Length: 254
Figure (cartoon, rainbow, N blue to C red):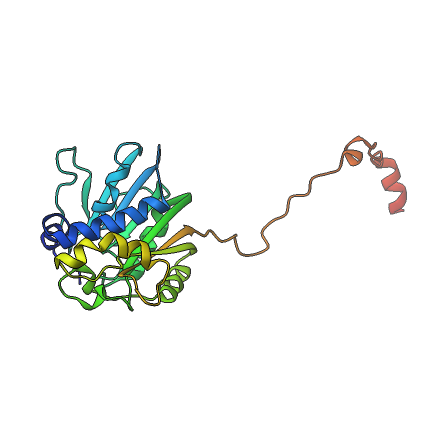
């Protein structure tokens, strides 16, 4: 079940914990994708907080928000790029997206298969998709105080297996949100330190979210097909045998 867009906005833009989570996840995304100059960037679910770094240089940025969740204008103070859409029918032509970010769009969907099919459809050749989901082993998926406590949490194996079934090839994975989901001052001050330490000792500090970057896998056509024979240069230059005359043909028939 999708969360209400107003609850998501209040968490990410009006709470200290939400702003810290936004910064931690966005910094990790920018590490994976430093720039998107001249590219089409799209986000699905509530990925808008992660798309701001690409507004300046990208050819086009779109924040797709599913109908059950709702939509808000975004970004503030700039021309709106957010769009309300159906999970099974995005207003994007096939193969148009170069970079796709999915956050709060897969684990909360009642039809993740449909979402992944649309992700595959809109992604262009050479494009990359980044799927961000709650970590089943993390503290954030166990807390109802954050959006990551709703929906289905994943392990990295579960997410990669699901992506492979829908035509994606996992390329690399990352993680973020190592600080506890608490707004207490002590944890908030140590947030940046925990983000740096967490990646080095994930067994002790499990992340709040998992990220998998995947590319679009296109299968070769099935079946033998038809083969085209190209003659060699010697065959083209060699003289052809003279055709039989009609007289010779009548003599053989006798």
